[in-house]
Length: 321
Image (tube, rainbow, N blue to C red; front, side):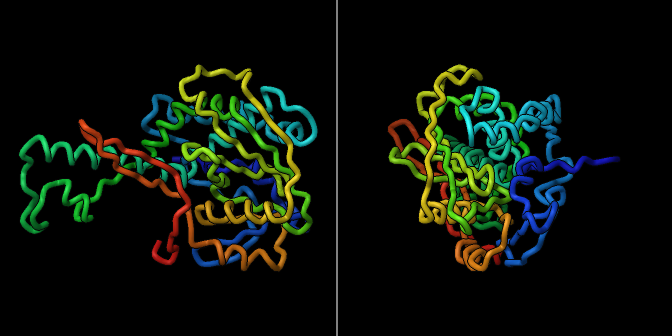
């Protein structure tokens, strides 16, 4: 049976980061072992049948979405850089970003955690309200919640299940992003161009503790920072994007370095760059021991517990991966 090799980071996006002297290749480094290589875009960020999801009636419906998003991407980046983006350009860029946040392995890993936390909390509730059966003797004493708490039992979530939820709601995410505030960041600092990666969406805390900005490099010299508008949470989908607001900002070398630090730390494993100047290997080495993860907080209330989930950049030892 033929299996499609689906790119979870679109090739049309990765081609923006080709190294001029390498033709159709980029520079790359793995966070796991710091190995460097020069891949073609078609050879990285892909999985067999990655866009096939058995939890959906139309298992490859995300491909229809990409057909609306990817063909306009190059034109959309030009409009963001040089002109006023129209709704179709906002849709394309917001769509590419939403795809990364839905179908990449990193996204599906992170999005599995709220489901796992909910199931663990349900196990606690069952323990409190009923007399659950005792576990097998070889597992020791305790109820199900105890076994989950100390790791004797693990709940495994098929990552394609949260992927299916994300795909089913991806147009809503595009609308929310497109009806929010955007900073278009111009990095004119020669020699400090942006990295990208196999999960090219960095998170950044805003002045509002409830809101995380997403920073995505569109080219080595242009990035967008989306600050989601909380008022859009329950707003109807609107692809005319009447609430889209933007400003264009020339950033200094210090902010370019700060954004690159976030991009490397948020990468799942492989970072890419259009050049391999002397500073890049050590920069990746210094910032590789992190990744994005879901952090869960249990907040007790009178009638039970509220589960609060939040994406954060957390330390991660790749040697034990």
